[in-house]
Length: 147
Image 1 (spheres, rainbow, N blue to C red):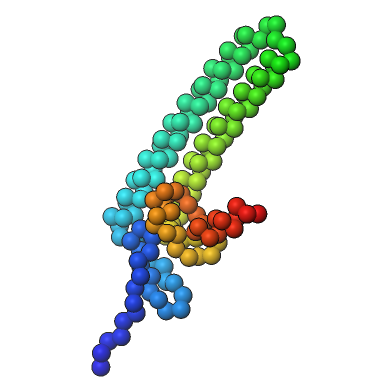
Image 2 (cartoon, rainbow, N blue to C red; image 1 turned 90 degrees about the horizontal axis):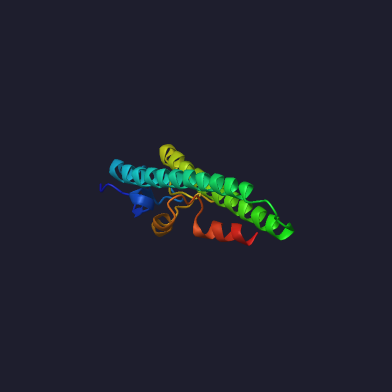
């Protein structure tokens, strides 16, 4: 009697799933996981450095604005306020990207990295290559953006 096997298909970052009605999540190779972890960790470190530099630059700009404010009219004050808000927004955006990368590292540890948080389908490798901290497949991300 011949042994019957279940066909396998490639999924994110080298993981495989068995086709049997539902996808079965299996782990990717340790080498692939470590490559992903190293890339995500390096990106997190870059973003932390960028965030720190942004905060330092914002603090220096704020000091300069405070010392140069004599004789400012409403337009000058408004411009300085707008610039300060832009600096804060930039720092917050970088912080959000740090949080996304840290979440991706957590998902990697949990074994759920590369799988859509909403529908459970695999996230295409191409999407993960372009945006390593992606948590949604393309379809779910498009639906989210339409809301």
